[in-house]
Length: 300
Image (cartoon, rainbow, N blue to C red; front, side, top):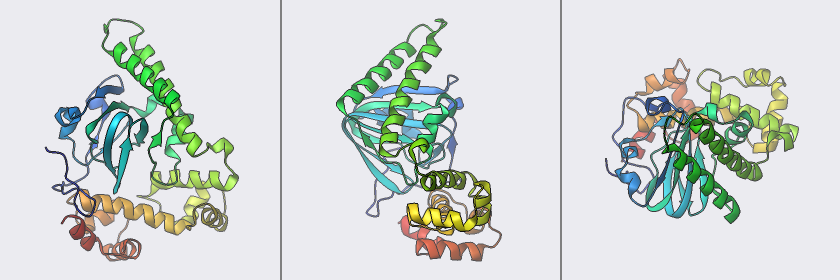
């Protein structure tokens, strides 16, 4: 497949599929990770070239050395520049990176390889994570760790300590990545109570959006009252609990409308609604167009 072409509306014109595929790292490797260094045009020739829009059940990290790359993720086109760091969370819908004029590192890692405190930083962003520009010293450290891990990966498989050494090197890299994003968005330990509750709510929302639509249920899960949760979210984010729920539902609906061939009724049930007409009203009020109009517009 050729590199997806970005249309004038910013999205790729790909043939739809029945559902959004989920790629599992265990189908490719038994070690729980992949790491490789790419040069300009190499990703076009690699196995990643076969991946259309998809989700992963694992993390993906990029460290760009030179050039400029683009990545389409959840309806946003993000530019990656030299010495930049970026990650994709499990479950986020994305295309493969367009890195024809870039070189750098690709790392895929099972969630079990990333310590919980690092995952808290990566997963508790209230909005879509953005690329981070690495200072020279951190870029050198990342490059050294990944080079060593890659080199060790090509050594004799009979080495008893080969995998533990690679895991240690990758854990160090994940730590640097977490620290970079923690600097941009402080960890829960440094957050005010309202900000911490807002992060915990967003994490719960992503995990439960298919089944839980009630603000009171989220408040209960967080052991706070619904009025207090509303007050906190409005203070920290500017939006109410209901608005956050609707935005997350509509984002998932947009993914399915654009990337799959599921009809509106099927999407309605997938997202936990019984009434397609009610779901269409929720979508229209939030997105500004009906589900079918959205699908038609973005598949031009």
